[in-house]
Image (cartoon, rainbow, N blue to C red; front, side):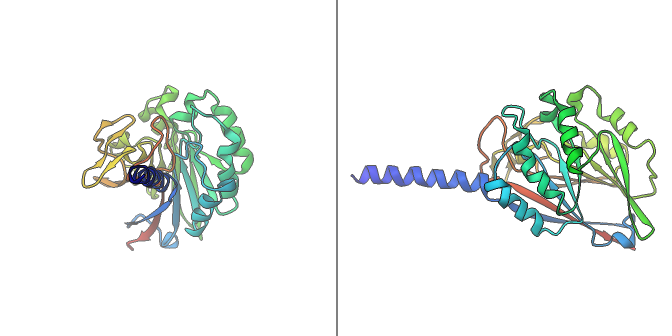
Length: 272
């Protein structure tokens, strides 16, 4: 009887551990300070959502939407893989997005899973219809009282174009004196972002390494293999800072371990 009770408690413990690791959303805050941040954008708040992979956080995504709303964002960036190519359900994936647009302006780039569905146009049309700013190798200028910053976005290399050519297209008409923010799904392309003098990059894709080993970091990430370099947090080289979100959902391996789903906040701060 005691063995059965111990086994039962062990199973319950494992279930609770996995449930918390895959459903307890945390918020990570960063500050990006630069002379290129205009005074009128001081305190401008960016909330990043990445790699939802069709995961569900409460009825009608209530828990996720509430967490995003609580960040009080000026803009929301979605950095790819809002859907999962292995269990494609666009309507379910859009439950959260259609609520995000009521909170703040939403800017979006695709990830490899959108490309893998061969339904990129369908996804773009659905997001455009919701009022999302879709960024397929393009850029926009955000203005505040006469001052401006640039937001650019590139698609995923799985669509057949190399990162440099997509950046060339996205940045072709950009005023590089402006703070330039890039939405790009893949963090392993960091060197290319640095070579193009991007100021601030938002990326995802690595799922935090899926399984995080305390004191070491992520175990494996797509495009980087075992013990990947870019899985979570900020990375800096020359004048470029890259923020990598651990993301929210899973693909392939069904569990996140020591790797809570994450929303990222970045507050802009003007040095001047």
